[in-house]
Length: 383
Ligand SMILES: Cc1cc2nc3c(=O)[nH]c(=O)nc-3n(C[C@H](O)[C@H](O)[C@H](O)COP(=O)(O)OP(=O)(O)OC[C@H]3O[C@@H](n4cnc5c(N)ncnc54)[C@H](O)[C@@H]3O)c2cc1C
Image 1: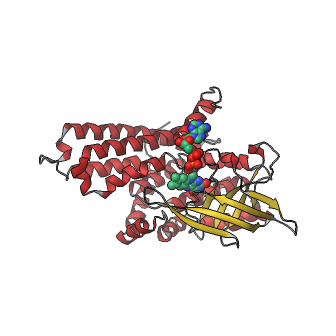
Image 2 (image 1 turned 180 degrees about the horizontal axis):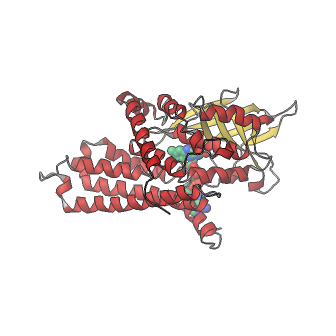
Image 3 (image 1 turned 60 degrees about the vertical axis):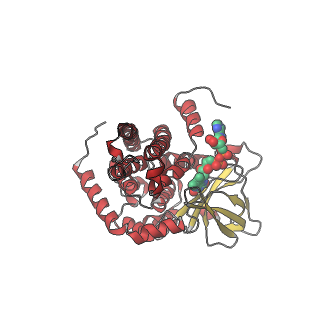
């Protein structure tokens, strides 16, 4: 593996920075902070218009095949700039799944809308009784008796971006007799359908997610994704893209840079700048070490994604390390700034509140450890 950045990636990175500088205005940040919605249509369309969404998919899947290094560079810049990018990663993820398993019609309609920035998607996996154990989903889809299609009833938890999304990639139980992994099917649910209800849910960090309800929602069979009862195969594709490929690595770098900049301007109670105190420098140095390791693990996922297999193992390792490192960094920086520093600083205090969300969303640390142990290290099953 070669760690030097090639000139094309360097130029691409510069272009991303220019687009972000143009779009990340104070108004945009105020709007994201107030609504808690981690998405902005202006930025989203700017990214789509440049073909950067389509670039996340290899050519055989219907994309334009930007290199994994450039995809990693895109997410790194989005995170360093604290850009609201959930719509971007969801559009790429659902397109990636449709590229793998979608029908020609789904590719021409939903995937085309996602890749050109006309629509975004949300992910309907988690339920009140099935978060980590996502295969225990109880939302039902049954064949409609009066014609083609399905009728969906149930409830999903944490359906982030449902307030803006046209499509939900929804996991539903289609067979109650089969083993739990084998009775699931994915559907694309049009969120404007009668019977869909979206209820806001604010997290500790201020970020908005949602509870979504599905009451006799009709879904044409043309919007079934993959085989009937083949949902788990689709889920494996989804999870390998989500972890490590679509961001989540450089939040710690953004936090490190923020803390270093503030430590140069904030004074301790005894008058010197925080950056001049040895215990503060030591804490920042530890964060910098973790940041480097997270970046290297991220580079490994990008490299694995460029081969012809799904980077499930590398992605789980990277997500586990990067999100736990973020939590350690938030702890260390809050300690370093102390009550005097924090009194004037909402950004660092916010990092402390967002850290547990990073280690929960997209697979908790415990679940990732089980996965790494069982699949990667071939240890006995946890249960
Ligand atoms: C901000 C946010 C946004 C999210 N966005 C989405 C979204 O858009 N779409 C979506 O579908 N989901 C989303 N999620 C859901 C997220 O993926 C789940 O919260 C996560 O999978 C954990 O599920 P849970 O909260 O039900 O916790 P539980 O599964 O109930 O877990 C509770 C605790 O038990 C531990 N635990 C569970 N099982 C095991 C085990 N086998 N071994 C050891 N420990 C275990 C967990 O690690 C955790 O500490 C989001 C969550 C958050 C917080």
